[in-house]
Amino acid sequence: MSTTIAPEVLKAAAAEFGTPVYVYHAEKIKEQFESLKSSFSACDVRFFYAAKSLTNIHILKYLSEIGSGIDCSSINEVELALYSGAKPENVLYTSNNIHFSEIERAVELGVHINIDSLSNLKKFGEKYKGTYPVGIRMRPNIMAGGNIKIATGHDKSKFGIPVTQLQEVLDIVNTTGLHIKTLHIHTGSEIKDVEVFVKGLSVMFELVPHFPQLEVVDLGGGFKVPYKPDEKGTDMELLGSSVAEAFKKFEAATGRHLQVWFEPGKYMVSECGHFVTSVNVLKETGDINFAGIDTGLNHLIRPMFYGAYHKIDNISNPDGPLKNYQVVGYICETDNFAEDRPLPEVREGDLIVIRNAGAYCYEMASNYNSRFRPAEVLYRDGKLSLIRRRETMEDLLRTQLF
Ligand code: LLP
Image (cartoon, rainbow, N blue to C red; front, side, top):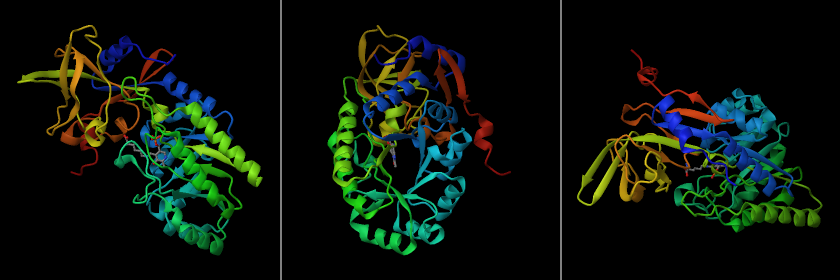
């Protein structure tokens, strides 16, 4: 039975903190983490939550508390993870096209590092030789992911070092004496097909013999979670058993034991998030019923940026007659959350909840149209607590000079 949040809780959050407001359900995060652990119980595995999906430090703290590591995509995320109390050995920095100084800082902080360019690998080798075990992000040249914007492993992608440049990698490793501890890939986001992970793993296994000190194969994140009603996510049980089987065979054939790491973002936090908004304006124009809500692409850009589907509920009138709506924002630009979406009759003032709002939602919010970013609330042990206040005019002015 999946953990859910009652409409009354979301109504209470709206009443106490105003709208729009992001509400995150802690126990749902835990449920996802437990299901990961059980799916991969036959593997020597570690999970590093992809912080980029939601970096509120209360969420980071909670994830550390339940036993997850934290994967970061900028040095600032590394600093936040450590600030939230995570230990350096539980923090991973998977960098992409960053300045070398960020890698130097990550070394100072003592976190795990995956390097994704020949250029930074060479600088790293020259500076640290074999003194700091490090990972290499490879590009497996596999096309996968929910859409091209979130596909990262294909042969035109900017991410990682193409597997075809293995010789260049080995030349750097051999001339500098680098200690390569990890090989990493991240093929994309929203990958449903278990075979994609298995194929990525076999690409990695082919590289392993070149790295005698290797301890870890890191397969990144990208598990698909359901967004649409009745949609199926990645079959995690099947994935867990397929990965365990592949490692077992590899170990039997080579005598080498390796650990597997994952960096799930959406899987951990997508479904825990509920974005509670209210209806400002209804507009009927010809055959379109617009429901204008008190938010826009400034707060949740996934539908506009990726064409992503988010389930939407009218929790104020759940039993009302169904009508089709175009749910739109208040930004001075076209910002459709949904088109032709059947919803129980919507009235001005109704609370409209956008689901799957945990991953890449608040995190991708902006101040476009000089709007304030919303508040974030954590629902844990039956209690609502404000974990980030709504912005104010002072926040908009804070970095401007007078
Ligand atoms: N590891 C690496 C190196 C990544 O680049 C990512 C995501 C992840 C792990 C986590 O992937 P996940 O498990 O969340 O699929 N903003 C887009 C998603 C961008 C993903 C970027 N990298 C969206 O809203 O769909």
